[in-house]
Length: 144
Ligand SMILES: [Zn+2]
Image (tube, rainbow, N blue to C red; front, side):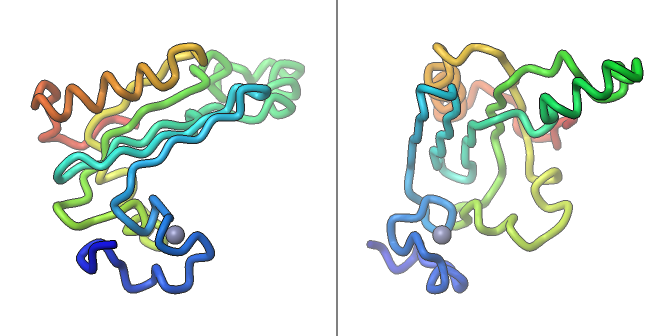
């Protein structure tokens, strides 16, 4: 474990040295039965992070909204998954966003959303490759 990847608050993390939030470690996790996954890949100054689309709201909330004809306001048609490219700097990690409100949205440089569980990790890897090959415009904050 490199001493340079250690963050101040990492000592308190129950995941310890294996934690991809506090350390620059790549990680993938999948629960096939509920089609939930996450993937974290650090690439230079950026981290590519895939998971559920944060704009996708709870199914029960959607049901209530539909009953009251409010579905336009809550994004019923939001895709299930999201891959985001976040600027963390050469030594930063996802933990940099944990306690700083607004930091996550201003660090988000690219967002792609989709509905395909079968392509969840392929979609992630495609973005990782695009960042590695400098094919994405990461100069502006992405619209969330
Ligand atoms: Zn941690």
